[in-house]
Figure (tube, rainbow, N blue to C red):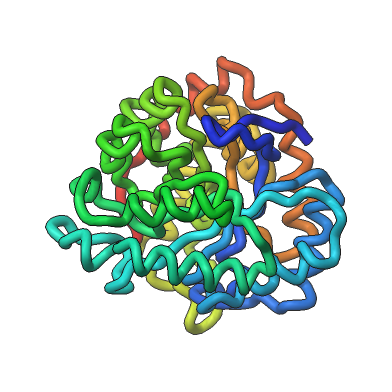
Length: 322
């Protein structure tokens, strides 16, 4: 496993991290705790030392599973978690007052809850689970960040920005108070390359890349006849003719790179890791076979520049969360 520095936090983390949304058993259907713990343990065995979770993933269930893992292991495991917004609205709606998103009191309370769930004395990275750049310099949320750092309860503070809104963090990054930023970046959504990633490099802000496989779309396993379990959020994400659209586009990617559909997950993850502004990518991993596959890609090699350039024309900006 190759390791990278998470910006100004100074943390050395695996370039492939463990995305722990799915194991929270909310939105994603199919996770079982025993298998989730096996996947978590295997991830540590294979060199992963960074896990991204959130209070909102199963109302703390994901955090508690991660806490079980940490208690059973001797290795240093870096954990990032997230504070849910007060109004419980994902994503944050433009014009929302900061007081409906995050206050110092709310952040302090949530940090304490997460520390209990995780069984930790210090959280490596505490993040807001949504963000509006209009909140920079507003409200009292920063007071909580300063206090939590002074108390040794968090090492770094970050923001997780709204889906497909790559420019909705520039002001926060320029303020100098943000250590990390989490956002969507993949073959389809390459917009972070325009402003966000250059700003992260300039201000030494660590980057945590989510949705690297487009919720499964870039695995090559989603086709016109694909079905998802009842209650799984992907039924909405890939509704109507979206599965056919995705399938046609991933076939075009495979053809352009003279690759098989089975190679698409590797291509998708290596594309992201080829960017110098990326600290870590956090694919979701529900099962051991997914851990094995993803960890094998964390070797620091990325993609050949020729392939990276070919993938530029496959950018496809859209928002399937709506």
